[in-house]
Image (cartoon, rainbow over all chains, first blue to last red; front, side, top):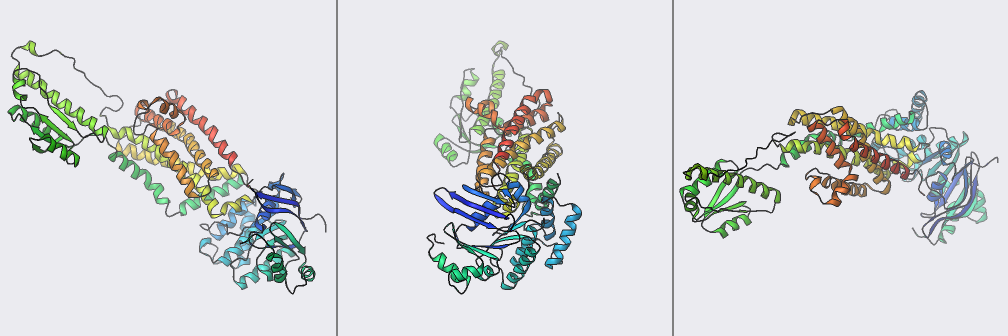
Length: 246
Length: 372
């Protein structure tokens, strides 16, 4: 592995007396699909928000795509894509208008935006929906679109915060096909999920409990270490010890 | 610049697509000007009064007639009991009880001083003052008529000073002319302070701002994208409002309208700065709305829209220095009604510019893409 895409050392975030993320250290290599698991409230989203420059860490070090999270957050932002847990494209804009807006923000030229929009709309099979307000689309479509928009500027890393939450199994499957596709093209994927079958698709998986990373290995390695049949069993065994409730 | 173009396009699309807000943006200046100008009037009309006439003479009857034909007073009821009149006043049936004493006619015909009593409902102090002033003027007029009739020699007519009033800049003492420029200021303030600030908090509330915050978008690009559309809409409202004021209400444009637009541009930056600042310290639209309203009401009450700043206590007058609404209302009235030019208002414009130079950078500084 060359220089890691993400490198966190003793990364910590406190909110008052509460330590949401407690000195976590890990590395994610280029082109890897990294599954970031943990129960609700374990600190996954907080960690992800620190890596994407939305939240300033309290302590520790981290670099993303080689840039420091404290000193070069704007450099990081040019190289990452992000899809938040909560759908956050503009519901009162059409599919095409949302693509155009984010294309413009990422400094793509008019020509490039048009070309990308056509490509995207075709790939998603949204030809008939392209001039519809996003608010009127079903959740699965919205999520697929949000994922594509996060990849619009061809980032080095894409952060996906529970991308398949509330989505039907077929769409979920299509989603993971897309994830594999972008990973093959060399994009690093950092993904959180609550679906343990999805964890099996990842190259490596980390499991957070109470702000700490309690386990980090390939899915096969984890099953072997914990003598479990599947990741779900590993997860439950670790998460059961958690002190933070829902 | 490229990014800003896309942001502006997005904001305008959203504004023009907002079916709840768009009609209000166009209707607001019309409704506010028409309603407020007609409703917020200090003109006196048809004051109902109760008469207690103990004199029952031709002279007392003449006084009552004179009050009635003036058009300002209307005899509602009569009795020989003052308490009954006061009771009617308590029920809001009348606003004045006029009491004429029993020796009224005798005193007047023998050139002796006489009295009448006006009991006025003073719950609304301003109207009470008007009733007193109108009533006094009519009764005094009547008094001099009577004096002329009964005095046989000319020397008995007392020499006096007659005052000839001339009302400048608003010759008909038209209240609407005074109110409309002020209401235009309120209108522009609402667009600037509420729409721009609320827009950012809304994005925070529904979460769309997070997607923007993970992009390399620059602070100045984001802020410009948020302020410029409402700056344009604010100036459009000012233009629409001025047109209605001029063609609908006959408000004169004595001074330069272009000067007003230029100052309106600066003023909008001040109120947008305040709105933006509020948006940086709040998390929900409800909080932002509440704070913005609080500030707006204080600004309006202390800004000389309804009552002159000059009659406020000293501390309130000093506070008016930092009240942008007060400055712009003053500028509006001076330019529109008095034809003030740049030299007359430059100190006020200077104050507005200073405010914009303080609040805007403060708000931009407070706006952060990352939570610390």
